[in-house]
Image 1 (spheres, rainbow, N blue to C red):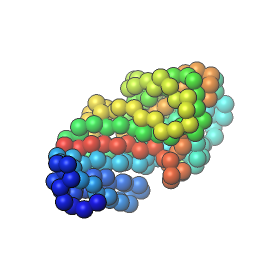
Image 2: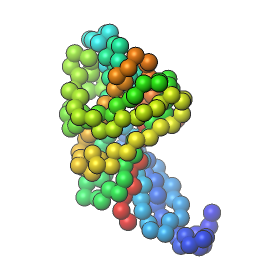
Image 3: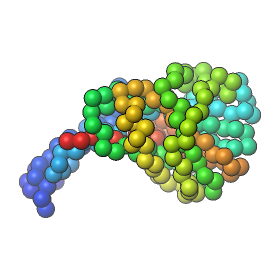
Length: 191
């Protein structure tokens, strides 16, 4: 695509900045308002389970959420790149590998330190308030939820969310170990 005007699009700007373990990649597309979308990858993720309370699952390719064994998935994002920026929207996108017919809850954990290689059910951070419920994750595909309010509130921090499935139909999403389908926080910044 050239930089010439196409149906009101007047120029090319940086649109996506992918950040993963401190490595950034860029791509540009035309836009009229010069909005910027940052795609933030998790800096840590893991799941814990009451079934194996002292085991660590920080290196797994799938993050599980399952009510029966109290499996909880934790995902941490570094929001330092958003400090001082006006966030217009923030959406968590994740790829469901093992679909469920149960409601999946995205809950706040907050600005709490935990180690991806050491987190277990016994030392897990407390899961707090409900941020949003995903009514259906019954298709093996990408799903997204709006987290704008909480991301605005925690801009500039290292912030953790949890995925919980309160039913008994297991659900799994691809973790950050799966480079092609890892969760991503897509943040649109004001021009």
